[in-house]
Image 1 (cartoon, rainbow, N blue to C red):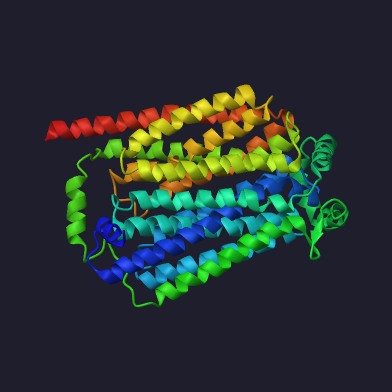
Image 2: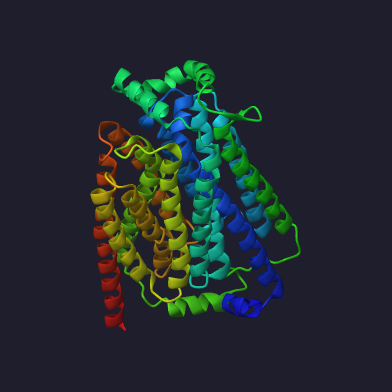
Length: 476
């Protein structure tokens, strides 16, 4: 099996093979932790809001501030990771520091005494996440090339989705039995202030600490710490421990392979000869604009579900208890986990364009299923989010690989994917939170509209790529 793995990697140097094996193990463990820290926030979100005496719209700002940080981190990394971090050691030490800070900021989140500090910690957490994920993706293409790295990029996101799934089960033992109290508290806050969400940023500085005392009457403590804090403590500890593995690898005698480096002229030549489906300059620009739009929509869809599924199940038409409501996140994350596992296998058989078209069409089916069944049946809600998670999980890895067929994405272009993802992730959570306060069903309509625009965008991407390929064939 190891021999087949080495043959697939096409690396002749044994030290380079070992470096890749150790790096992949560390990176996958780290991305698993990154998945957990994101998912635990969704089910715990209503209780964090209850602690800080704020409402659904306002607490959804943790996603907005988080993905502003993600955006900054991704852009910063795309401009510096291969240009200024010229040695393997510098790259790995950067991965170490960002993962360490991810753990420390996660540790601070549930202990934030007011909303501004909570938002600052979330910003730092996702700033580091953006740096790490962008650096990880660049490093895979930089070391293995655009074709060999294709399944490994999908595996990377598969481990993030495993983290999503683990996070939903991690929170279950620590969920308080206060769903009615939380929803009732949220309704009172909305009744008292039509646009009180913005004022919470100011009043949170004074009222947060006082409300912590009141909320302790409703949220249990374990070893003197509120139960909702423990998932954050556990996931933070995981990230901190894994981070030191990058230090060990950076000081080992193993060699980092360089597909785009000075010793890889053969690989670069092979890549140039195989990448016959080139786009014209105009076609490339149109393709990139559509890719950014698509990733914005993809990020928006995922964050709507990650930020609102538990809240919808808890305080929406079904009014489930806290544990049943949190299972909605588990089904969505299970779908993402299974979807990314299958996408790894499918990426070796089908073209990325084929997978992306299929993904968006089935996301449309899932949206329709949710609109029809989720307001009335628990099973309809669970199955809808499961299908949505399964097919939306294909989108990042396949979109990344599709674009790499036409251009080198290890430099500045790499930020475009994460900029798109970040923009959608910034806008959709507060929008979803706001319309939920008006009518809980509007959240599902929002998701359906986003998916519909995705379908149109993918159709345009397919058209542009086909025209580019046809033009190249005519020229030859």
